[in-house]
Image (cartoon, rainbow, N blue to C red; front, top):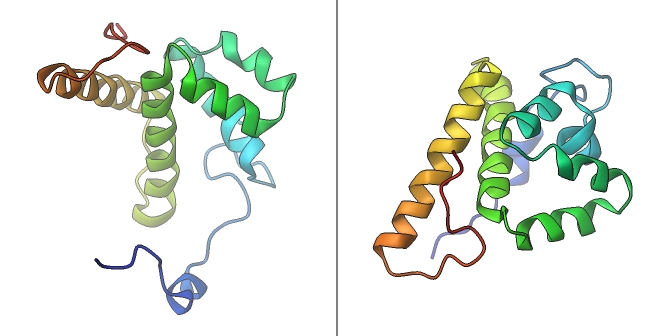
Length: 133
């Protein structure tokens, strides 16, 4: 099985910006990516996760992520996380700047595709049995 690790010498050649590639905040850390960036807040709002943002402020990041992954909208949350990661990396590595409506659309498509896949393969979808929209 091939290794999933990226060699250090390749990582060293990457010149990753310390600032947020979407809002130009001087520091892009986990809290910024998940909550503080206005673009990410807009993503969470548009996919219906805005109610969970207040909870984010009242708990540790890792507890918030765990609760979201185990919650009733876990599939949608995970699709949103993945698309936000792709959004960031496409700006950095591909110089492609997606608009928020594209990220939202890609999030719902990924969510629906995952739900459809699991339904066709007989998996129990107790945590998210309805399509998101």
